[in-house]
Length: 254
Image (cartoon, rainbow, N blue to C red):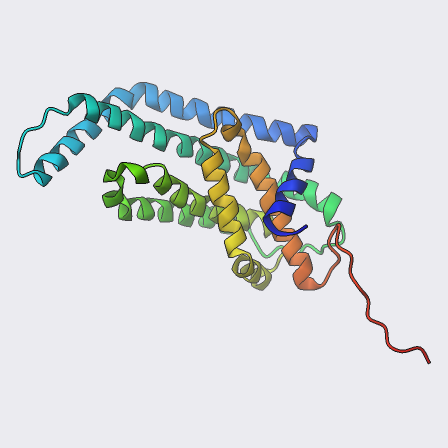
């Protein structure tokens, strides 16, 4: 078994270690508390602002014809807030986990599944911070570019999944391999596994909307990124991978 399915299966096996369970719990609770407080303070104003913005856009699009859409616009505004709230909680938990938990998770996975994989430390704490800044800036840019598509209701659930999926993989991939790969190896692994990484990122963004379970999926997928990256790095160096049977070619006997 390889790729995304293998990474998720191995990550699921690591998930039930007491230390991993604690890391799964507290970043989500902190992120949830932060955004619930923000929503409690600014939620009503945000609904009003969104309704006003949508009313103006509809009036401009229909040549100033007045439509009584207050109830529909209020409902649409609340739907938009919910769609935005879920990935914000998940992304905040991801950032907290990246700073406070990824080194422990990498050590946990590496010691059990990749004990012979040399640590070349191509990543740095500054590099991790910069990577997160680039991911957040990219997220804002992608959301701005996607604004015209938000007015088509069938696309509402798809846009955040597509954008946050990219952000997820951008944040998790760096910290997953920074301790073990050098700069060239990191770049090569990112290039070779870019589709699998985006798939994992999009899956995490989608699962975030599953009640309760979604908020705690961040830990599972962080572990999966570690397995995916370290397995690809081991393969790149020609090192044995756990569960893989390697054939040795021998010449004719004399």
